[in-house]
Length: 210
Ligand code: CO
Image 1 (cartoon, rainbow, N blue to C red):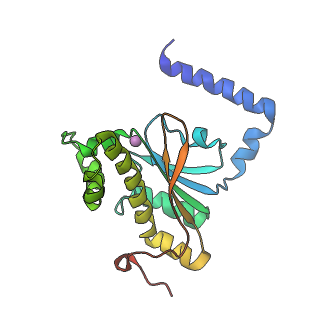
Image 2: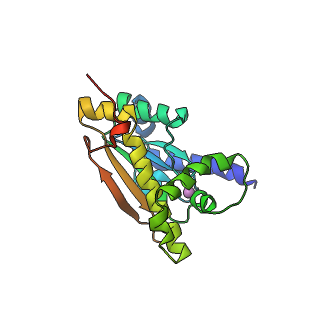
Image 3: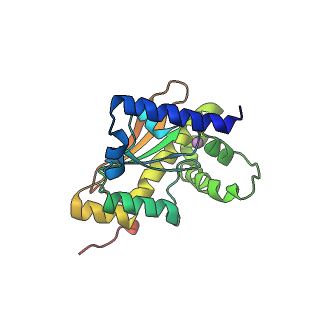
């Protein structure tokens, strides 16, 4: 059987499993979505948001890109963020990176990968911001792991620097921002940073709300 046909077959099996548990499963799901979380994760196939968090359809609003970046000119990510924060009114935004991230590894290298160089450039910037700390780590594998963590830290900061998040903090006291790292080898999620609404932001990035 061709591999893609297996996906369609598995879909049928999944539908029947769900209907076995609740016969109105899909009718209820079709009504509306009220997710409490926005997940910004890596596109890596080994880090499926719902699976690793044990969540069901309807619980996570998801945006994924290479190396889970929050780039302030990325209208795709910003549209997802704005919709999640302003319309869905999520209470938590989670940036989830992972050890063994190919995007981060390539950003540490000098490989010319074409278009993606421009995307990975944002991770090279993270490296530059933390050059002193990273260069002091002698074991390359550990330096790479630390850059994965620092990348998540910077992306959470990038979220806090948006008017979308600052406005929601000002008027609604949410969302809380989280930076997590998923460990491919253990399956565990580790928290790297937690930023509560109203946390201090570098003054140059703050906006006035009246
Ligand atoms: Co990755």
